[in-house]
Amino acid sequence: MTADGEAAAALTEALFGNASDARQRVTDALAKSNGRDTQYAAALALALIGDSGRAKILADDLDKRFPDDTIVRFNYSPTLRAQLALAVPGNGSKAVEALAVTSPYELGVPGSNTLRMNLYPVYVRGEALLAAHQGAPAVAEFQKILDWPGVVLDEPIGALAHLGLARSYALAGDTAKSRAAYNDFFTLWKDADPNIPVLVQAKSEYAKLQ
Image (cartoon, rainbow, N blue to C red; front, side, top):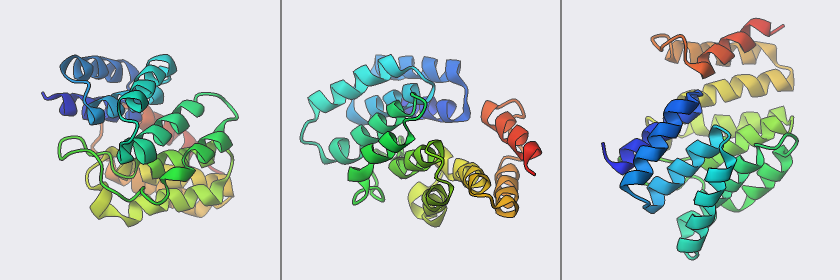
């Protein structure tokens, strides 16, 4: 598998909650390349699984090597900084602030055909708003991903946006819409391995909805 392919797999595993698999994929990807896109996906995967130390080293290196790169400055770096901020409880608002500079660029298409990373600033902003207990604004971010299927394509956040939407509606107090969004997610993942951590967590959340 190419470095980009390994990095894409690492990011997917991280998003799904498979930390050990994500970490191994990161190692495999970086052994093959430290290219801009590969390194960003690897860093984001590490940040998602809570390996903040390694993620920050990679993020700092991207900033150092690509100081004038538009994608790094206005997409990759702010997204990494926001995800790293989310590792600290209570930092949801700080993460949202870190993503402010991405707004004019967030619907762009960075990366490659092998390593698609479209709309990640939007996804991380949604997660940050959830962490900041802002349900209604979080709904708007996850809905944005669902409204742009031609940009998100087959990225894992296309499915996970339904889960984010469900959590956002629950936080906003709209149980009916939350249930509907959970069911949309479960329908998409009806053939998934039942032991995937993010799916197990989603089913637990759904069972507790009042």
